Each structure stands twice: as C-alpha cells, then as structure tokens.
Image 1 (cartoon, one colour):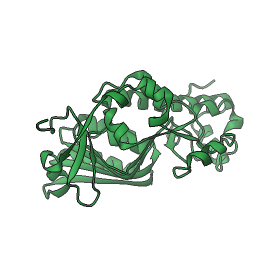
Image 2 (image 1 turned 180 degrees about the vertical axis):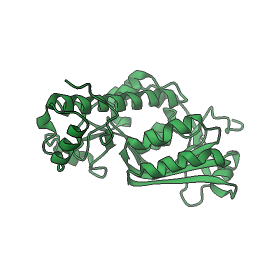
Image 3 (image 1 turned 180 degrees about the horizontal axis):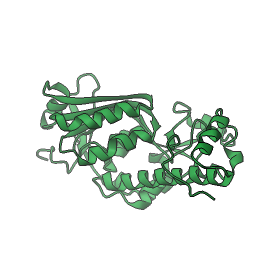
Length: 296
C-alpha cells in the first residue's frame, strides 16, 4: 500500500462554509443533510463560554482613532506598500504568492478581507512569509472573514488586525471540496463518490500513485488532520490574551460553523481593534490593557 502524501498537488483541504447566510433555525433544521453545516454562536455556546474565560473577563475600551499610531499609515498613507484584496470565495493562490514575494520590497503591507473563505493553499502561499518578513503587515476585514479568511486575518501583525463593528466572523474545521465533508464524514471511498467531479479526482489520485481506495481515503483524512491542527495551533499562538488549547478545541469542534462577533474575537485576542464607524472611522474599540489606551 502506497504511503499517503498529505501535500498531494491537487488536493488541499477546502475550509469554507457552503451556507454563510442561513439563519440558525434553517441550518439546524437541516442537520440530517450531510451537505449543510449547522452553525452556532460562540457568545451563546456553553462549551465555548466555559473553555474561553476571556469572553467574560477581558475588558474593552473605546478610543479615538487618533490614538492609534498605525491607523494613518494603514489607511491614509501614500508610502510604498503591498496591498492584497481577499474577496469572495478566494482561491487565487498566485495572488497570495505574489503578495508574499513583494512584501519585503515595501514599507508596509495590507491585506483587505471580504471573503467567505477558500482553499488552504492560500495559507501555504502567504503565512510562512508573513511570519518571516520584517515589513509590518496589517489585516482588515470588512463584511466577511469566514473560515480560512479568518485565519489570514489573525496573522496580521499584533496591534494591526482590524475589523468593522458589523463584520461577520466564522471558524470551523477544515472540510473537503464542495460538499463540505469534514474528517468525521469521510470513512470510506463511498463518502467521496458523490463529489461532482469524482471521476476526475480519482484519475488524478491514480496518476499520483494512489490506486487503492484505502490510500485515497487516508490521504484525504491526513490532509484534513493537518489543516485542523494548523488552525488550532494558530488560534493559540496568535492570541494576545492567552487562548488555551481547550478554547481552540471548543471553537473548532467538528460539525459546526462557529460564529464569532467582533467583540468575542477581540476578547479572545485574535484581533486588535474594532472600527466603530465604517464611513467615518472616528473611534475604535480595543482591549482595556491595549497600549493605545491613554488615561482611565
């Protein structure tokens, strides 16, 4: 039996929601449908509230944007910069790669996010470089930062991760291809056969040397495990308020889309500021211990 390769050329885990606009009642009423992922709200979930004490203990404060030294540089500057727009169902790994290759040549970078997610190949194209570069990189989310788009958002520089007050945020386990199959849904090859392009998928796997059904399933499952581990580790490492492994596990437990409002994400230390007015951007909400807070 061939050793499964989790970095198979054409098969990265797809981490996005298929129904980002479904209401809670609609989503839960279709739990039996394998292709629809129910969602829950972190602010109302007992397991999240128990595992993530920051939600109730971390205090926030509203400040003028003039107290943010990064703000004018990020939003009003003409100095050389690298800019990337991550929009829609984002799968432009070449765009992400070009951004990563350019970032060392400019004085700062910004990733503008309005996306329901995309392929984890975007992570592979961008995140290692974001960790290495000495160039400051800000991230800002507008209407949506769901799934892998949220993972990109939290990898901006500390202090430079912005959302708007009505930005919709969501996290979940990685899922495979268009049908949203998580690792718990994939046990045998039969669980993949209703993919619209299954015959093409199978052919590519065979060209890669995966002949047995068992090898194909193992490769898919290992890819999902790798993606899930990366997301959990990222939540712990990128938090500025000590988010624990238990909290990460509660947020990313299987079978659900976990909705976070901006205040929750701020308290968990996964973002740094909420812009309170989309058009005027006069004030922002930050954690009360943020160095931008001046006075009582």
